[in-house]
Image 1 (cartoon, rainbow, N blue to C red):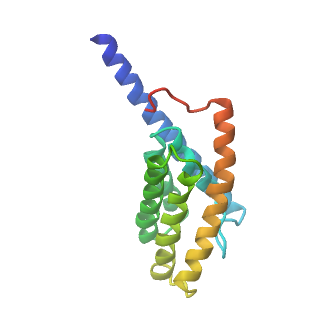
Image 2 (tube, helix red, strand yellow):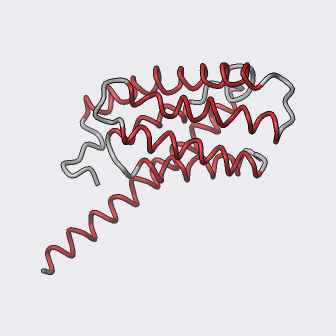
Length: 171
């Protein structure tokens, strides 16, 4: 009985630590993208969005990505609408990635689609950007596709090769 408690407690601790590490990486990579001028403009390439493939390896990535997105938006001075709906887009994308984790390549689509559908509305209504919503959906989606479907797949291949974050029970 005591051994079972220790194992469950250890699994919870590992889950929280992984989520916190992913959140911290998301924030650092977002700040790096912003410092390099890649996180704004017509096509935004955010290094942090490559982490959106991590729910394929661990469920701890789901809260980690959402928390990281919220904190990154907070630190970069985003408006409240961006903090709420940008975090929601990331959360929905992470959940979709987890649900499609057993498919090949298709798990990269949920973050791309959620951001392409939600973020243009935030840019238009919260920030008053005058480009058309369909145009912004295309450019946000393209930037997200580069971040997730190219950089993310490279990251995932490297992590799998090193067996990083692989777990038997996928805590």
